[in-house]
Image (cartoon, rainbow, N blue to C red; front, side, top):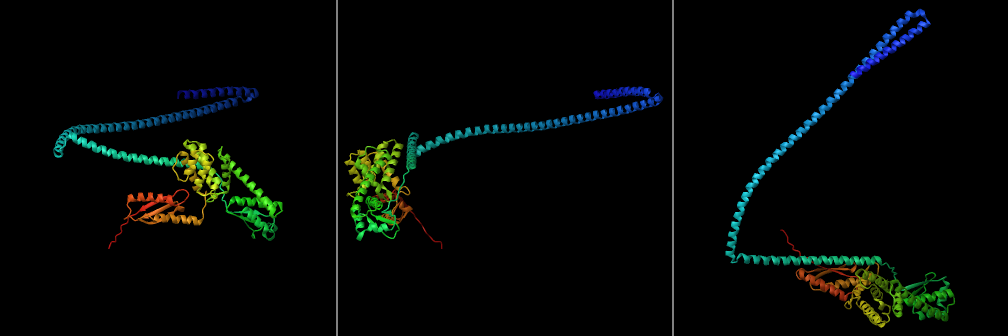
Length: 518
């Protein structure tokens, strides 16, 4: 405040000095200009001085007002800050007081609980002594009633506990075995899925006919020949039926032997290109076609061994492998099936750590008997075993060929692998096809086998013949008999029915009690 007043005074003084100087200058100026107006100049000088004094007074008042307003504003702010702090201090004081009260209450509660605990401890000690006395009396009374001493009772109790522990241990072992089987099944499924994922082979559905395209319909007459000599010559030399119908620019070759059908197709195509169709030329072309097919068979066999990576197979076995290109089983190409089984066997063998090359070799040769089973007597398994023995295959491969349908016991892990790979290749979706009649007959046979057992009420073949549900008479079949019935039924299905993959047997026993409220 004092500084403000001093500033105001200085401003006023300065203004006075300035005004005085200005007046002097004005007076001197006017004196020089007009001496006659001296009196007026003095008057004007006084007016100027008065005006300057008024201005200085006004500024002084303004400065004083500003200083007072600043002082009042500062005072109000200080008072507000002090008020807020007092309120905050009061809040803290209330909190501290409430906490102190809570602590006091807790201390009182703890003291009460401590006193109660002391009383309870005394009561518990009293009860403990009473229980010990009562226990001693009961032990004495029990010894008197049972005729056993406490040591004998302990031995009996220990024996009882041991029996219970043995039972629990047996249950635990059973659970562990069940869990282990589940893990084994899961691992096996993983191996199978891995093998399937790594193996991809194309499967061609073979048929009993081939179609040869003709350049024009006039060629049909030339193929038939005069009085049918040409067509009879072709059918006689090849063993294939030629069907010449209204189909435009096409001839159909029909035969159950795909090799003969292939020979006839190649020979007929050569005759069409050559244009000279007569019995002598037909005989020449059929002979050339037979040589080409024979060469194709050997090339297919060699390509199969190269694709699988198996070497050192006898040339005759390679030729027989090539013949399997023209054989099918349920619509599945026999050669492609053997290649797929070989690849799957190698993958599975690699997963479990056995000889991969031997597994591939056994997988490739497991169905070798199918190449000549229509020319020789016996099953394709026995024919394949004889061929492998003839051409000096190893005992492991021979056993795998002999056991891949479960005819003999497995003598190595490779035989088990080949059987698993064969089942995977045959049973996977889309691998094979069968006629409606064969499918229906298999379902009927499956239900007939189940109905032949004593105590069976009804049976139903479901899931495309991959599952059979058997309903039994509750009065004749008990729960324990159900286990034996399922096992016997599975065994009989394996012995009497041929099927791809596996069949699930479900035996169901249901008891119903009916009454009526009247």
